[in-house]
Image (cartoon, rainbow, N blue to C red):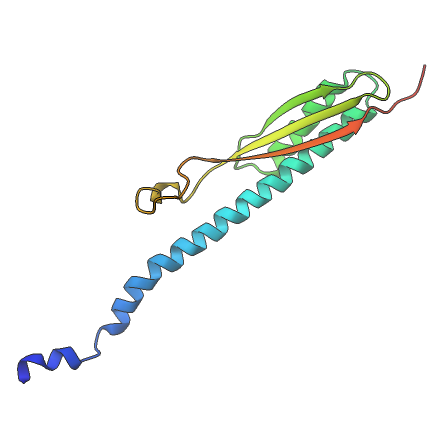
Length: 141
């Protein structure tokens, strides 16, 4: 009977429970932070596109260039962790025509290294896209 007394002992049970739950809690916290970064980058991509389009819509010359430059500047300062790309989809230029921009970020993936342990997790960076369209404003000269 003396040999099996350690089976009834509860000493060390807290350490085993902690060893099981702490990695799960850390993974969930990293996933929450990652999700927050992706949502924030998506919002900033949309806002950068809107900012650039607004500048391009009221510009009187080189509308597409001004729009792309303003969107790139805003995107770089709004979310410095990602690498923003700005594409002009419709250059505007004529009074009443549309000017359209697309801003995309490549958001780093913090949990991508765990893709080997947990199948289904994305391993590469996340791509987020924001677009905005506005009518070219101006006055006749």
